Image (cartoon, rainbow, N blue to C red):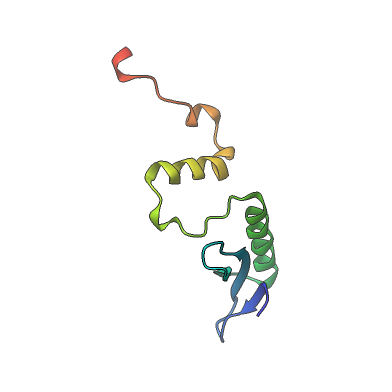
Length: 98
């Protein structure tokens, strides 16, 4: 099966999205990631485009299970924090200076 969108069983509006990640340098095996998406096929195609864009930018999270909190928050600010007011994400003043 190649990269793309596939209907998932008999469930209504449930899709599987397959994203190719290239070769694993350690094992030499081809890597891929599957995502489940609920919505229309058109929405699934938009989600696939978003995932491909993240993969191409290098911001696609493929295995966050061993991340530290700092790594997760750094990734979240890089990918989702753009919509927040800069005051919201600015460093807090030291409690000693209050």
